[in-house]
Amino acid sequence: MREGDTFMSNNIWGYQPTAGHTAGTDLIGYKVEATDGSIGKIDKHSDDVSSAYLVVDTGVWIFGKHVLLPAGVVRTVDQAARTVFVELTKEQIKESPEFDKDKHLGDVGYHQQLGTYYEGHRPR
Image 1 (cartoon, helix red, strand yellow):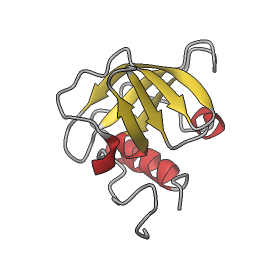
Image 2: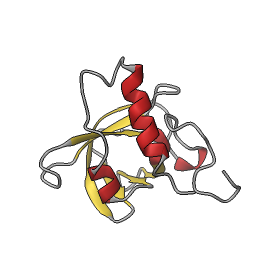
Image 3: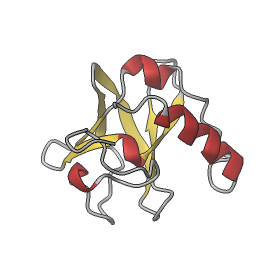
Image 4: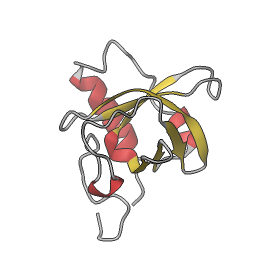
């Protein structure tokens, strides 16, 4: 990554230092905004080091699909507006690998698959 790029960390599973998220802050219910519009609300999240993520309920936008977003795609967290902004388009999120609630907690291969997908969509 070059200095000045939106993402300065290579860890897709960790919040960026510039995101403004404080570990321990409850993000459940926060709105999530892609670069081109709203995608839903946070249903679950984790601040675990090297495996932080958001589970977003997209509601009727993509027929009730839940998506798992690695914390590294978070651009900023606006506490006052209860909104999380991510550096992905709605289409990139819609095309992401399907969220598997049974695999996301312990399946390293599943996390690698998601990490690879999202790494490929980070701004350069």
